[in-house]
Image (cartoon, rainbow, N blue to C red; front, side, top):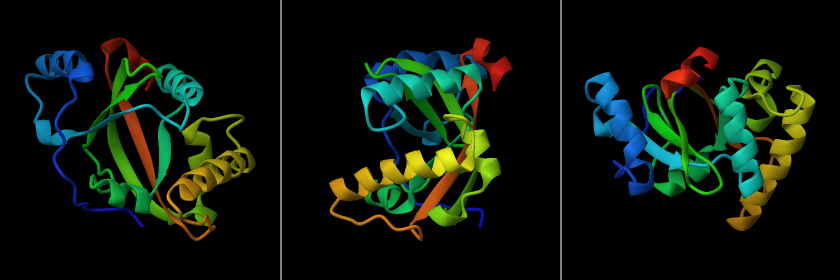
Length: 171
């Protein structure tokens, strides 16, 4: 199903990404701060944040998946189309700004090979996606005292790079 609405707490724009956010806002003639969703590095390790951030900048990675329970427990709610996020590297340095264009809520077991390819990790296959995301979500669940299962709902988010201007041609 496609997610239509989510409940989220308005987040303050963190100071370490404010320069990039302000430049983007100036270029756009102003951006409503309510569109700011989060500043984050992909994955759960510094190496993943750097690797996946570079895949976003190259235009290879145009999607991501997160557990619905994790979004809900964070107080942000699931992302929705039009949300803007600042992608950072392992040192919290901003790399780019992405805009959420679509979010589908599906069980882990129902993620499609097309989504896995758009997520752009590894060889782009569903088999690779399932392996690395099983490992990732198992770690995430364990750290929260939960157990992974294939019926766990995921927010499968598609996004596009909207800033900096040089990155747009690869989005």
